[in-house]
Length: 341
Image 1 (cartoon, one colour):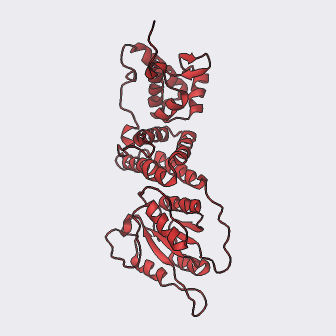
Image 2 (tube, helix red, strand yellow):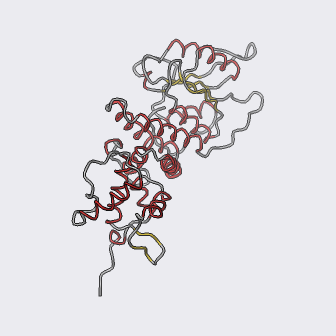
């Protein structure tokens, strides 16, 4: 009697293979339909199971499309290359390094669910290199669902963004389109993250949290992550984004009466302690009951600056806990610390 096939011999499901390659499951089905790159065997005649030979063809297809080869030509070349080298180990059909490999330089640490988030980052990087916006979007939204927003930001989004940025910086402005696409998709995923309905509070209720980049600062993604996290906690927030002029910040504080103002500075050249002090001294309200905001410093630009009375959270979860407390709410339960806020 023959032995039962091992899980490896049984093949990968479409979902598992899509996760491994950094493509959407619909992309694999489309390639099968259009170019005949599909599983050689279908379990029970219905369910797709991708064997090592099938995986080798798809890995070659991904490498070729990442380098700019049109999909139809890439499919033909991938099948021919794997057929020529069928005696080699699966995955060795096409020579050359994985064009996304050095981009996904996330720490080799297990994720909160016991998985290896490095593979998740590699898949995201591969999809970004191919400029496969639908796949990038699906993977980012899946990461938020799987890990929660704070952990997805820390362990998936930030490492991949940093890897893309390093690749761009070291390649003479090549791949800038990859960084732009990935940044836009991260921003979109943050805005789409589930959040609580935050109604307007009654008169006398705590004001919102105001989020703004300091003048001259264009890096707003960490503030977008913080904004999404505050909304999940039910804390009202107002996002003003990049490079907000001093006059506009001061006017917004006086109009909104925020409980807190978060100032983001990516570099020391934009971090202005006089501006932070000015906002922390801004008052509003009636005589005898005037109030001032808690000014929170976010970003690496503030590092090494002595700023008594101006808290500087160490990460996204730290910032969420602090701001929820300032607003009178409860901080996130059991969340992980995060880079970037």
